[in-house]
Length: 263
Image 1 (tube, rainbow, N blue to C red):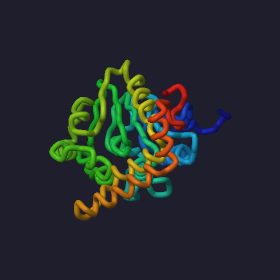
Image 2 (image 1 turned 135 degrees about the horizontal axis):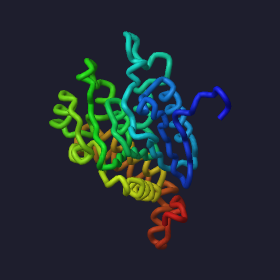
Image 3 (image 1 turned 180 degrees about the vertical axis):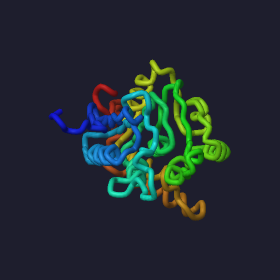
């Protein structure tokens, strides 16, 4: 890194079909500063555009996953999103990503950091961490993050934790639907690798379509819903990807999209 050049706050590394995006701003607990948001948005865009990337992992360096918005930048009447990629755009990119996104938490998360976690498809954490929605204690509202958090959480728990701001542990987060798994810290990376290996076995187009079904369930009568989902099913059964999967099953071999070391 050249003299005077600012440190990179977000790193993107791609290996074996997995893009790892690492928040690296430990001096402010990986808070969502304007520069971190800009770099995170850029890294997400690059990972989504890379045809070799099949799965995205969002993780961090330092003792904290993400402390939420940078409060020093948030003082005053101007919204902190002004003039830089806003949190809404980042949450939308994570939520609508056609590629599965997994959050890895080795440290605590607060406020907007939990919005990021909820926007990911799968979230795995060390069982030693804690989480919180402290907004009301600061005189603000967890409004933006509610868009991604509320679909994940049990309603009663959301009311309790949003309104009290009380910290809760990783096991409680699993119970209320905010995390998929809380494991001993020494086993965290193994659990992340287990999930990424499972996701790499899924066909890319099928995963993207399945994510769309999960995001936007059909509306209308039961008959209309079945008809809409029938069209999706038929389209993917007859697609080149679907036909390859069926042939591979019949021939007892791995489909062509599964990496050789993940068969």
